[in-house]
Length: 223
Image 1 (cartoon, one colour):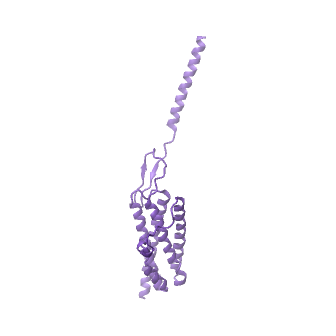
Image 2: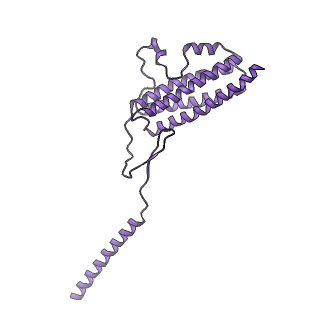
Image 3: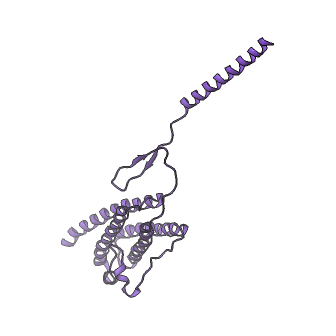
């Protein structure tokens, strides 16, 4: 009887030691925890966050909502400008550029509308005084006078006004992105961050294209 009891105790102890060994091996072989990275603003480095960081979305800032609502208005004018191209110029290069701008910005308008709707926000900004709407324009937007001149122009004059106007317009969008990321607590929403970064990259590239088109037209006009 004593031998049987001793054997049972030995078996239980051996199982406990085996369980501890298995646990230690599992802990040693377990892969390291995921690395949490917070992306930086355009031109700034990303930074690693502690593994204990949770995936909870940061609270939405009013600056983000204002940015999306304002950029919808901003993009809408760019699409309006490109709609004039077919009837105002035969410049094939400008026609291709206009089609590109119209397509990309129309798609982005749809994205911004979905982003706002998903968060229960209105698509349009509140305009307290519609009579003074021009004073509420986003950076870089053409004035009513500039838009009138663009509509009246044809051929080379239209090309010049369109390119200079759209460069002004794109630079305004870059200002809006910078202002967003310069605002404390804004730009943390992942979708908005990616969108704003794409806007910054895409419009810088198009500015370089338009500047090149303007430089190429100057020698032609001197001939």
